[in-house]
Image (cartoon, rainbow, N blue to C red; front, side, top):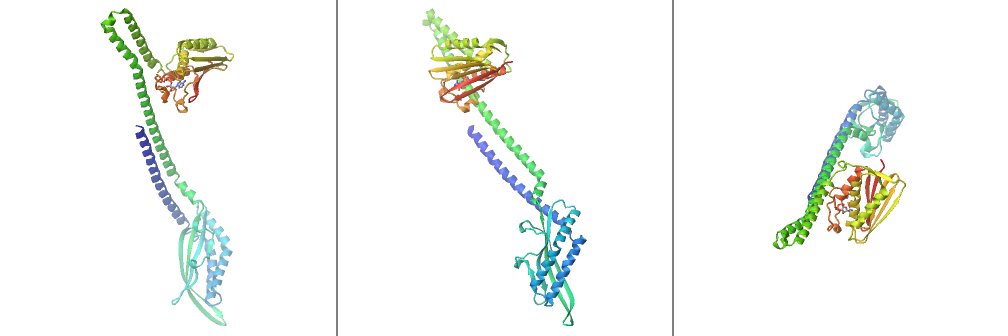
Length: 464
Ligand code: ADP
């Protein structure tokens, strides 16, 4: 059974791990989908922003005109290739602040609810010729970046669009008194890029419902699993306790029953029938065993009562006299064991309302256990304090109880699993019943113990 439970726990944990991996995989896929949907959506909403803005449009006209002018100079041989790039950078620099401000205004105008950085990056400037193309700028061949707009790091940049501008341009100039005309074909490739601020948290925000739901389902599954395994373990514990109880009670019943069988057999023999003395002895034995059986049955019936079923009849008891008488009677009952019972009293209050019958049973259960679970030189210390509450401490120098067993000793049918107690008779009901009696008095019972050193039970009953 234990192996089965362990196997079940292992399989469940493995199942849970597999489930979390699948769930993680699905969430990751959803994240990727949501991310690309979000970026596509943003791309769509800003892709034509600059086309519809007159301010941005006129800024574009300014730099394009200047740039074409520089290219014309280059074609006339009045400027170098580097001068064209420098000139382009210069004009972009001079309009960039205005461009950025205007762009942000456009974003607000178009109700874009999150921060966006945007730029136009120049990828290539090529002058086309039927014989040989003249590359003025190619981003693949230089580390130089020419951008109009915000600066965006490469890892945060998302592509918005790529534009290829192909145009022919003709202009004439007076050179050395001659009016010369020049035409060139231009290929101009730009790429619009954006950086969406906090895009990760925006995407996660869109997945919030899904994340919460999967977390909830996960928590429910773990909770159910925990609950099922816990009830399985509890049931196994109850089954073990019941088996132990059946074994214990069978063991307890065997001896008196065997004696009764023997005694009845004896009474049937002719030899005994003629001897009234032996008959008397045998009948006494039958009576004793009968009482023992009765006591066992009473123990099972009465000691199984819960505190709600215990009906107390309280009376005012002079506590010191009561404890002294109880301990004296107890000492007298133990004629075959050397024990010392020390007692001490403190506190001002002299009487307390308790049910004498039940309370005596509770104290005797503890005292009898001290005798049952100890060696030969038993010393019991009983200290009674009556101040704000009645507090009785009963300490023995017996075999002690392990920390783990201390958690369970007040449970019904529980008996400690140590080897030393195998020969000691018991049903595991005494301390359960004691606890119930103390609870019926609205009190509390605790235990302090160290294996091999002894045990102390502390009973506290409040004044009502
Ligand atoms: P029982 O004595 O019939 O087994 P109890 O309910 O009285 O049942 O006690 C429960 C268990 O607690 C005992 O089986 C024993 O293992 C442990 N126990 C109780 N009192 C003591 C004690 N004074 N010293 C050591 N162990 C004790």
